[in-house]
Image 1 (cartoon, rainbow, N blue to C red):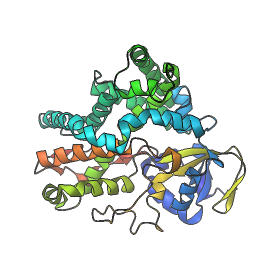
Image 2 (image 1 turned 90 degrees about the vertical axis):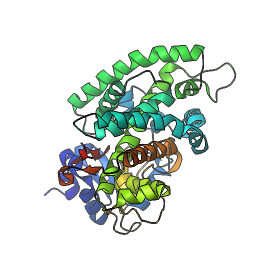
Image 3 (image 1 turned 135 degrees about the horizontal axis):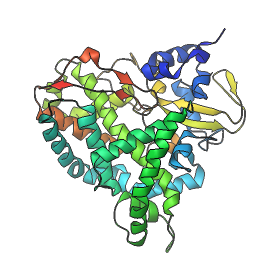
Image 4 (image 1 turned 180 degrees about the horizontal axis):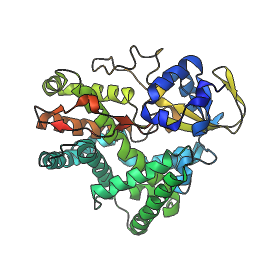
Length: 392
């Protein structure tokens, strides 16, 4: 008879992983799930241990979905000095202090333009027509891809996501991802060739030049996988995180009025939204040796998913973890990961979320969700509402 972990399917996880994680935390906190070819680690304490002990759990995963889909090692599949060097190339644009100097001026005009567009759109749908475009256009601008349309960038995101989440090795998903990856190369390689010769202040330029000895540069081919990772995570997390938070707030009577009166509450509300629905569900590692964790031994060379979405709903850390509570005392959660691979763009993501939500709620004083009970969430590695239809 199959164990609970052996009976879990990809469809089950995509539909709603949270009851599955709760059962695993209680009964099998470290368990091999054949459907996704991963050991799932679900308790907060164990998730933090996995992500902060690179000597036991390396980021360099054999047959990584990211390496497979990005055609090479990226920031998330590097360890040690190589990881530190690549991460430093992002610091000049994404350190919290730096983000605070430009985020409002960058994102506010984009959000206001998208608000104008959805007001004139009879569909009144917020995920694909408001939150995602703000997210992709904001990141595109700071990357140095401001000439690209939201449609192009959203197409890139959705295509790359097919491969990055393809733990089950579905050939059709991989085919879609590979086609988008090839399209991106055609667009990005000429831009990088120009920036290698003539640097500017864009993220791509810093990735090529920053932190290198005089006269040396990183090659376009070397940074391409990390650039694709940045495009995927940096576009997904703010847009989908904001969409999930909007859904939660729309179901709390008086929440929007309260935020209009007290906009200083937005930062805490966004923190709670990221805890409640982690836009990115896991960090993947590989054991360097046999490791005993959670009462079982994970064999050497095993792929392990530290489930940060589960850690952020661990009952031993958070009271009523399945409830979105806009008054929850602020405390750290796992939404951006732990350790050396803590998300480099966390401040940028929070800023994009704050501005997109605030512009929407203040710009449409009577906004509400239409048929809130019919809203569906999907995904376990990338989770978000599939659509949000609003009225105003």
